Structure formats: C-alpha cells, structure tokens
Amino acid sequence: MITRRNALALLAGGVPALNLARAAGELPQIAAGPFKGTRESLKDYRVPDWFRDAKLGLWAHWGPQSAAEYGDWYARNMYIQGQRQYDYHVKTYGHPSKVGFKDVIATWKADKFDPDHLMQLYKKAGAKYFCSMGVHHDGFDLWNSKYQPRWNAVASGPKKDVVGLFRKAALKQGLKFAVSEHLSNSYNWFATSHMSDKTGPLAGVPYDGMDSAYADLYHDLPKDYPYANVSRTAMSRTAPDSWKQLYFNRIKQLVDDYQPDLLYTDGGIPFEEYGLGLVAHLYNTSAKRHGGIPEAIYTSKTPQDCQAGTCVLDLERGVASGIPADPWQTDTCIGDWHYNQEARSRYKTPKRVIDMLVDIVSRNGNLMLNFPLPNSGALDAEELKILDEITRWMAVNSEGIYGTRPWKIYGDGPVASAPVAAGRGGGFNEQTRKDFTAEEMRFTTKGSVLYAFAMGWPDKQAVIKPLATNSSVAQFKVRNVELLGFKGKVKWTQDEKGLTVQMPEQKPCDHAIALKVAGA
Image (cartoon, rainbow, N blue to C red; front, side):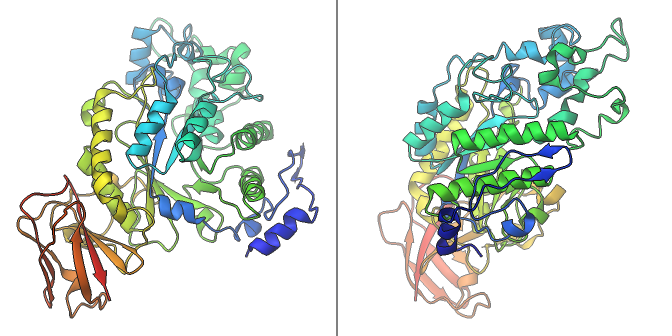
C-alpha cells in the first residue's frame, strides 16, 4: 500500500520516469511517482477523502455537437440515413456528402458562454466539483490541443479554451475540477462519416468523411474497414497502434496542462498499457502536487477495473445495489447528454433529482449531474428553475449530505425493499426506479449523528421503523431529534414500533426532509 512516507521516498529518490515499451516503439514517458502503468501497481491506490465528502458534482456535457441542439450522438447519427438526426441535418444544413460535421463545428458559437456566472450558480446549488467536457467521440478537443491542432475549441468553433476557462472559474469558486474524455471510442464511432446513402438520388455518393483532407477529424480508416458491422461497433475500441498512441498523447496533454482533480473516461480503462499509463501518470502528477499522496480520481465504468484500488466505479444513469464498500459515482443528466431543443419537456423534475441524490449518497455514492448547455453556452429557463429548486433544498438539508457516510442500511420502505434492477455494467437502471413517497426513508451518518430522510412530507408524523427499541438493524438509543430547516422543537417517542416524530404544521422545504437524530 502507498503510504505518505514511501510515496515521498519514491518522489525524492530519483526514480526515473517510466517508459512503456511496445512493439512499434515507445510511449511517451509518464511522470515519476508511486505508481507504474500496471494493474498490479495501481491496486495500491486509495480514494481520497475529498471525493467521499463531496457527494455532488455538476457537469457541462457540451461541445460542437451541441451546436445543432438536436440531441445525443449527433455527429455519428447525422451520417445514418433514416435517423431523425440525418433528416434534421439534411433539412437544416444540407446533405452530409457536401455539408458534414466539420461544417457544424463552425456554427458552435458559444456567444453567451460565461463560466464565472455558471460556477457561481453551481456552487450555490451545492456542487463540490465541476466537470467540463474534454473531448467527445467526435474527436474535437475542447482545449488548446497540440495533437489536434485544427479541430480544437481554440482553433475553430467558439475559438475559446473551454476547458481552461471552466477550470479557472471552478477553482475561483473553490470547486474541484473534473474533465471528461470519450476519445478512445472515436475511431469506430465516427466510421459512419465514411459511408453513403443506400437509397435516393445520392445513393453511393460518399459522405465527407471519405475526404482525406479531413482525416484528422474523421480518421483514416483502412480500405477493408467492416462498414457492414458499423451499427454494432460504435463503442468498440478496435484501433491501430497509431490511434492508441495519438489517444495517449492527447489525454496526457490534457492531464499535464489542466491538472484535473477527476478524469472521467467513457468506458473502462482503454487500450491496456496506454490507458494504465495514463491512470498512473494522473496519480503520479497529483501526488507530486500533494505531498506524495495522489488526490486525483480516475473513473471507469468497468467493475473489474475497480475491484482492488485502481479507480472509482462510475455507473452511467444507474444506481448501485446495496452499499458498496468503496465510494462510487452515478453520472446522469436532467435530459439528453447533448442539448436537445425537443427534450426540454422531458427534463427530470427537481424531486427526481433530489430523490436520486439522497438515495445515491445513502449507498456510499456521489452524483455527477449534467445540465446540457445549448449552442450559446447559457442555461435555458427550465434548467434554471430546476437548479434553483436544488439550491433551495440544499440550503436546508446539505448538512445531511456533505461529509456523511453510510449507516448500517441505506434505507427502509417499499422501494428499498425491492431489488435494484440490473443494467449494463450496473448502470442504465435509473428509469426502472419507482417514485419515492413519504413511506420511503434513506439514511446517512456523520459521527454519532444519524440523518433520516423522509422522501416526502409525512401527513402528521414520520415513523422510522429501523430505530425501534427492539430493532435488528442497530441498537440506537435516541437522545434528541431535530428537523433540519425547522427552528422549533419537534416531539418524538422511541419504542418497539420505531422512532415516531410529530411533524410541524409547515414543512421546512419541498421534497425530502431530513431528521437529525442524535444517539448514545
């Protein structure tokens, strides 16, 4: 296990930066430090306390695909005849054999982008970390990328260092800074840009991805690329070493230049020694800045990656079952990942978001929630309303969220008693969850205090059954009960039925309420 003493010794002892050899040459060096780019070495990693305490992060899943304001995977689906985004693209921009994604990039203006204002709103809403998109599957880097010199946010599109501006604004507000990368899938994901219509007057005419002048964006695919399988290989990572090397170089520069506290990857650790080298490099550079102990987080969506140290498990649009021993993260969105002008009526309600937050925290997890920004970079009116309700709720109840740890059980009630639906890799199960009512309870702890969240306003009283005097969960002798946000005293009794708390006439907040229970 890496301790502060031996980590400092490694850093001070002149251990050379590591070269990772491969058949076609050598990867660039990774920083010297306590970790090597191997799975065995990375097992010694431990999650820093700041992440355990933070609980809530907000995310701007924003990039050139947001320019069209027409939903997820626009850059891929606009090249698939029959897809709604293909139809929209032809109608709005022109046929993709003539007007492709390279041309959509030029329409991403970010003309109302104000990262300082956004960070002020996010901090007020209770976020402890903020995540900027770094690069999506579309291969467009949102920073001043020396390995993608034409297709980055400084050279084209808004001509702004989006990652750098977000980082500066986040740190100014005291937030930890995260960045997401989705690049490892790009080689296969973007293969649709090399195809053509199957029917109609332009059948067989190649889309603009076949133009070698734009291979730095759309990739230089081999002549025998299996286009027949393109619908099944969107998230594949089958790519030549040259692409893996480029991936490594770009994400390493992102780490070096922007020093993220959290690096989110869309999938598991990619390309074995390339990805493992990046994880080690992230941790070693962080350790150098923090007295020999890494304070950075790397997330993976593959449970096997996170079974022994290594990284934090991220469940996309999902909730873990039970209480995992190690902290984990849900990443989800109030609507579509990329802004969709047609999805505003389908945004998650504030109650849905707050219920998810409390439920996830009770299970030892964090919530990283995306508010998709439109082309302009300014939140829409509905998003502002949702954010405002979260802000008002957190102002009352955050004491029971930040810095807490799980109790003996995460919850009690009809939903808690039902098994969590299985999803892909443990994720993608959020839509199967039933709405919470006042019968549902969730628990967090801080020292000797237990926070019991009633997930709705009880009619006259809240009954916390697991705190019965004869409970099989825990022998918890109650000394005092407070209702967060209520200035008066509440009446309560503890007996074999549970802890019964009488509710005041007026509720202190909308949505879940928190009872602060002090015990012996």
